[in-house]
Image: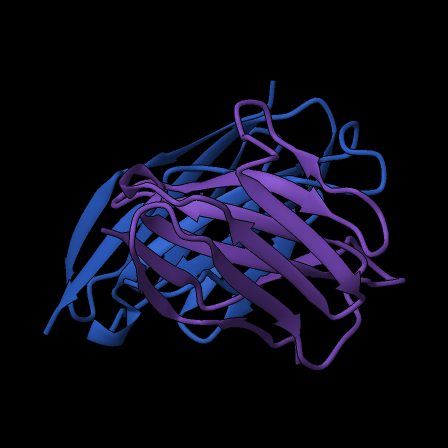
Length: 118
Length: 114
C-alpha cells in the first residue's frame, strides 16, 4: 500500500494569519513530495517540489515567501501559507513519490486540505 | 511544453452502459502515463500507470490502453459508484532531473445514473 495523510483536512482562518498544513507518507519513505492547489472544477496546479533536506523548487508564479515548504524527513513535508488572504482560499493537496526499482515512481496523493480565509 | 487534453469534459451514462474516456498527450519523452480517480473534496486515487504503446492494464470494470498519442480509459458496465472525475497525467522523461513532475489534464467528470 501507499498511504498519504494530510492534516488538517479543513481549516478556517482570519486574514493575515498563517496556516500550516502537514503531509505524511504513512507506510513508505518518499523520495519527493509535491504540493498542489486545486480550484473548483479545475485540475491540479503544481505549486512546488520538495526533497528532504533541501530547498523546495517552486513553479513559476508561486511566491516562495508566501508558501513556505519544509521537508523535515522522508515522511513529512509541511506547507505554511503565510499572511493568508481570501484569495489564498483553495483546496491544497500533497503527493508523495513512492520509489520503485522496477518502474517509474508513482505519486500517491493525500486527501487534501480545504483552506478558507475570511 | 507537455500537454494533456482529456475528452469529453463530462459524461453521463446509465448503469451498465459501457463507454470510453480519452486522454491525448504531447510529451518529448514519455516516462509514464497515469490515470487517477478523484471524488469530490478528496485527493486523487491512483489507478494505473502505462509506459509504452500497446500496453493495457485492467482493474475491475476499468481498462486503460495506450498508444503513442493517446490513452483510453474503458469503463465496462459501470455502476453508480464509478461516478467521479478521472484524471490523466504524464511524466516527461526529459524534465525534472530526479523529480519527475506530472502534467495533468483537466479531467472527465463521469456520472453514472442508476
